[in-house]
Length: 163
Ligand SMILES: [Zn+2]
Image (tube, rainbow, N blue to C red; front, top):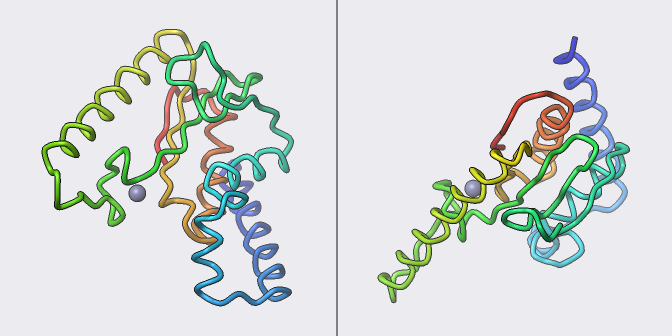
């Protein structure tokens, strides 16, 4: 039943994307620019999609461990949108700079430890934690899937998820 609902929403989302794509054909370079511009950044993609589906949230809530990017109060869910480079996702976008390797290795190790600590603190305080990797929002097709998974997590009673 839930799966059917998720699938239907996914199809609707894809149809909408296709329609808007037909309206405004974009070149590859325009699309690449869009990924890096402020107004279409990964966090904004998630915010817009959640808002459009009726979820209300707070941004960068101070006082919560790790100052989560998005806090969905009603469902007690915090969402982190993680850059694959900074948080060393391990996907194909996870590169390591060749120079200053000690500095970078140190930095990435610190980031990982901080992420684990933050996650643990939030769980102890009773928050449910969603980690959304930037690469799962790279193109329109994966965006739809990511948002469906995120929204079904928010409405579930699972403690954490990684998308
Ligand atoms: Zn990634």
